[in-house]
Image 1 (cartoon, one colour):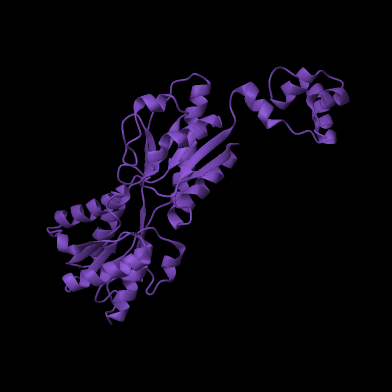
Image 2 (tube, rainbow, N blue to C red; image 1 turned 90 degrees about the vertical axis):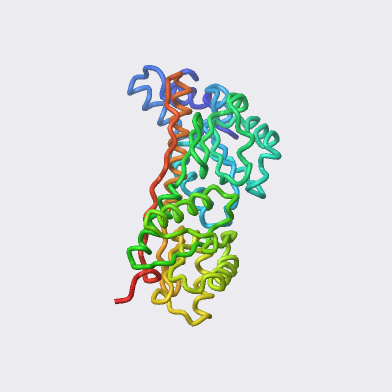
Length: 343
């Protein structure tokens, strides 16, 4: 049987209203009475009815996360950050997984209606920006929804987003290769329908131009984030541009495939060809040679998203003004043997 407020009140010799005030930390309660109620709660094993509390407070202390690809390293790390910060702030999570990142907007009304029906306090949209999958966003629709924080997308006026500065990360990688004396730097990019891939492409392009190097289309091959596509892209790049002396690969998994191709062609890394990846997956340190890469703290991305959402929820609850500010987190270049000049 469930222990009720009435059971606690009877054991403590107080009214149910007094017990409610102690449980919800409301009103003026003497220390003696508070201690008596707490003792009764512990002895009876009372646990608050979360459903009833949410009806009274008009909030569920729950967040919805719309996500894709949690079987991949990046999205899974972001979700870890979301879960950690949500738990710390007292929120439970409802996870809605999408099968494809590029067509979720086709079912947007069904997705959003289901989440609103669950009375979640806020949403985190953790599906990356791909193609036209942000077409559903408009001010009228957003007004009818709980507050939303978007991940992995270009900043937009009126929206709160949290992203990694992919362009800066790419610039760091290419600048490092140029500093190492590399003159002909190729690019294996992710699928260019993805915002992150376009930003990394732009960073590579900008840095070459700034150093008087021409970012010709022949230096670019598009992959799909997988190791297999990295291998295919590396073969194509070397057939097209056999004199390249460095490659910036836009994900560590693609870099893994690329490294294998270079080894099979009996080229030495980094002496003949320097390689830098992006992500800093745990395995990258144990590639051969260990892979230089751009570290993006995706756990921090998830934590920051929850913090921003919590601030908005609390401001709305208290009818206080709040600012709509996006966050762009700075990645860090991790230098290992795959890109260091010998000697």
